[in-house]
Image (cartoon, rainbow, N blue to C red):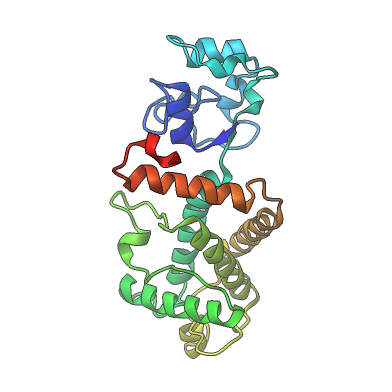
Length: 262
């Protein structure tokens, strides 16, 4: 069973669990607030590791205390059969944080102009270099001009808002930019602005100690995106076309559904 968090919340009718709740996970007792089982802990030592549900009925008793979903009766059902959609969890989740944080780090180290300058000027430079990179590699993207609100949120968290496909393209660009920064190389192609200010100012500023980790992380994310892109597709074109037409008819048609077969 695969879907995004919103689909699972509606499907299983979770009332007290969700991304806006203190009990923020459907599969363990991780908490979004407090010192007990904080979701922000990572690795094998994280407290919530000990609270992961493995038995279906134990999971149902804790997570679905007031109602039971018919999917529990599916032959072979187990908690492990529930899988989160990679597009939402990775492309629209982890990548938004990774892309945004990595690009802001590059900006702060002068790869898109004087780091003491305004952020909007840096983002204009970044976007121009990104489009030149896309043209060099003949990659289409619908990504529009970057602006501060697209990267820095009201709570000062860094999250790059983008569509799923654009996020994968931006991941590849950010991975290459991080490797260039780590290795001190100039970018290929025409009209590239990356690193020009640092080069003109003889690599102003101190080397970034986080760049090796950033380059490795973004490169790993880039490889993962490539593997997903090469994976098999289970929804063939004819089936997709029929579903798409059906959705359009139900959304925009004013005719009764019974008349569709005539």
